[in-house]
Image (cartoon, rainbow, N blue to C red; front, side):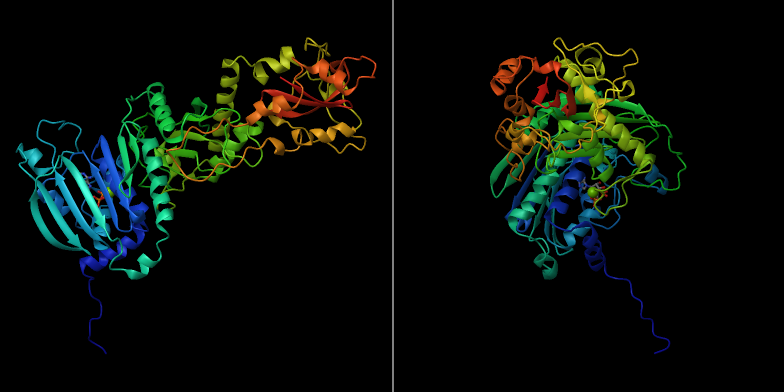
Length: 555
Ligand SMILES: Nc1ncnc2c1ncn2[C@@H]1O[C@H](COP(=O)(O)OP(=O)(O)O)[C@@H](O)[C@H]1O
Ligand SMILES: [Mg+2]
């Protein structure tokens, strides 16, 4: 019908429910938004409680800045935020949130109670976002505020004698959206998602004390770790947090910094609001110089691995992220130090110019895209490699670059003609290992091993005793780790490569007796003086060689 206006503005609570479709997917997303708010409010202690996987209750309590009554009412309005004020602020965001959407969205799809009390004047007022009206006016907040909201409608506002800080209680999530509620998974699955997010938050913020209570049972109680601005001061804090979450796992430190060859232009059109921080600063407080990539954190020592990526945690500018390139880089960096089908254990923080990475490609901001993906991937692999090398040299084992090639084991390059019919490189090993080689000797870079091994028709019969050594180490593969997160008992020591060393003779200890055992009637030619073919390198620690008399594991 002409002349009839059909367009109407949606009521706020409907608009909020629509926004909730994006922000609130499941209990874990509510926990994420509330914990991020607590972190933004400078909380030093955060308690997360859930019941029935978060379906019946989610409560997040912090000891942060708290809110005045006016602010508490305002924070339930859409696009109400204390974190930005002007469009230009979008280019210098240093908080987890800024959209002002989470609280009204969550409140529109649950039975919601906000209880808050501002930090008293004089108690750490500096560094607060400074937006609290009463703080500004220098007034002493007398009491806290409690606001009850049901499905987006405020039903009660009253004074509350609460502790300083904020507590948000979310009951019966999606009670007014049965279709959404039906899509929730089992309590265990939803609780696992909550736990997963909390693990990441706890790792990224070791200075904050986290408590996690599930169905009235305390799952975690992690004290806040003393930390600092420097990586050296932050590493022990992360290490302690990892220990609390994963048990005693052998971890090595990563502290790597390298220039990015092609620093991105700050005017890059792809620059996203979400990642844009003040030039050269990251929200972690570290200085990521524009043209550098900093990789720091902890990663499993050789032999420490998992059957899934569950303990592989990567953060970019302190946000937990998923990125296939980084996954590959980790595998590349570990190379033979990781058995086939196994995944690294790590907690790595990448600090990079925010203009060089886009985290706005995924609604939950979990996926990131680096503008120079290949370069970042290469440097992350290098960071892992260097950490492994440093570990080897520290533990007295010479790294390929420092020792194996130059003094312990000399490898004849194919240039010198030392190849067999199959075109493989032949290694001559003697005791001591520094056999004579041609002057033009060159050591191939070990990470490029294993060299392709062509099938050998006349494989010695006893070789079947240790076939897995050269074929992916399957017989040494540890039982898969059960899925699930901390707290876990101390994991059993991974069989790792130590197990492999028991399975084959070690040249330094029992090689000759072993050779004698296998070939008692043979002429007593020392095994190490027969031609040996290089099969591969395990963990940059052991060199696997084969001869027509069997396998040799060289430490
Ligand atoms: N736990 C909290 N402590 C103090 N203030 C909070 C807390 N949670 C929310 N707020 C305030 O409410 C505002 C709105 O929160 P939210 O809807 O999550 O939007 P955003 O975090 O994007 O600003 C925040 O900007 C902040 O000022
Ligand atoms: Mg928020």
